[in-house]
Length: 359
Image (tube, rainbow, N blue to C red; front, side, top):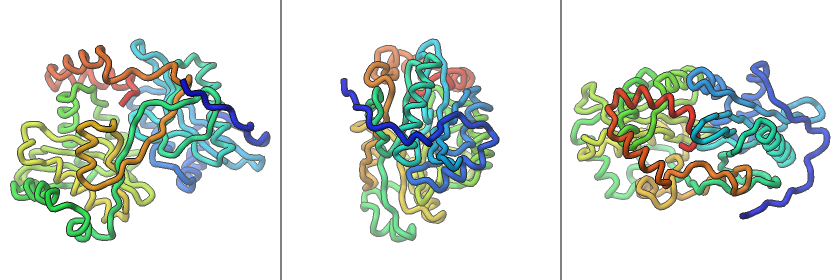
């Protein structure tokens, strides 16, 4: 078990504590300006988690001697009879963790450990893309990566010079079949139709429909909903939801219907997301997290991106790993879930999803 030695304490003038709704605007102003921040850090997620999943949050802020924010750390509390009591930043998303200077980061992490210990949490998990400050008792968590791809200024350049010819042929296939990609928050119910069926087929509980309604309402400036329709009609066959932030577009949730796999609607979905990202000023495409070496990872690699490690960390170091998707219990549960009717899965899924922070 790896142990990270505790560094020097943070400056004494830093004061760390939970913030209430009155600090929402100040919090978001800090997040928008802070290096390493992501859309996952925005205050809006606190409302989304509470209103649609019934989850409490502890949003920690570190203030300097002048009273201004020097760092922030959003934490969401998840309680489950199966998986125990966890604090996660941020569950269901790919990033989180402390942002701010190194001293503020250490102070926030130490306060998060204290909050976990005092509240009886058995696991604190911090999802980060950048390496967090070293704090005693916090060590590496699950091995996850993302795949990032640089994009030129125009979709035409990406098509002609950025994509291999084999990939262009795979995108042309659904185009020749008459498939069409559309964008807009009003398409989120068609998105949910595809996404919920896809998750059932994968054996994974789905979030409630209201989760995505709340995202559209609370994060409308940043969120992107896309649906691929068959034959220019109104039959959705692939769909995705992602976010544009600071020159990057991430596809966070995506899926396609298995019965249409032959015409590759997923390829058109990802290409359309890239075109939309370029149109909105993004120069990096983020394929979202995955486990290294799996089929999802290989799908993302074929586009020509680069692997980026996600150095997630947890407390206690090495002693409270989250439930593994490779465990016997998970495999049995997944197999059983795949056999449920879609309507049943969509009723039961939201009840379970709010208690599982592992995806």
